[in-house]
Length: 74
Image 1 (tube, one colour):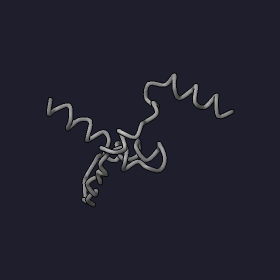
Image 2: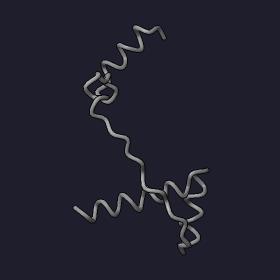
Image 3: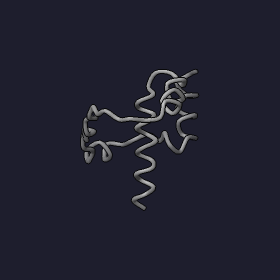
């Protein structure tokens, strides 16, 4: 892709809009909370299903738990 094509594609994507100096002047670095290692008992078939989708299964399990938590908080 040419630079012009890249810029045109970015301009047409609402999630990829360019930022200006004002954005960066007010930007703050936010560090995510560190994850904690725990021991959690889950059904074997649940664990195998997540593992069958490849590496990162613990991250996916965390995402499911987070989505449930956030839905309950509404």
